[in-house]
Length: 122
Image (cartoon, rainbow, N blue to C red; front, side):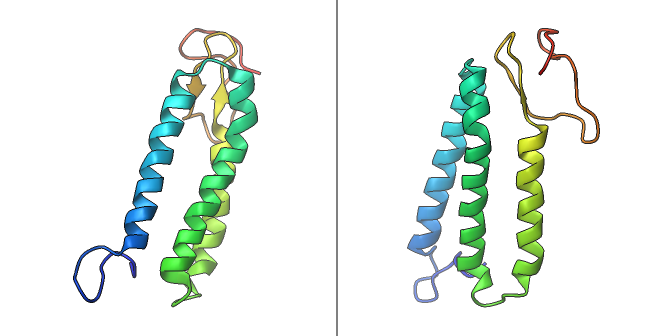
């Protein structure tokens, strides 16, 4: 990637360090919130906006680091990013009975019961 190393010193550029710090913070914060919070209504409300925000941030980083110099790459990254964002929103479910966040759901079918507590999923 263009931003990984600074041409003058050989070390990482400040933009890359800032991106990684924000990325790690978002990852850790979202894991703690979506894994330990049992308020399913709040998680259902925030999750789509969060996934879209993260997708836009990642897309912006891709544009800033690669797309400015090689715009053809965005033809592949753009649709892939939209598909991944859509699948993350579509496949993540929240159990009202136990409050668990269920990430890995089948692609073409919807799970009807929570694998942790057996509660019915909406």
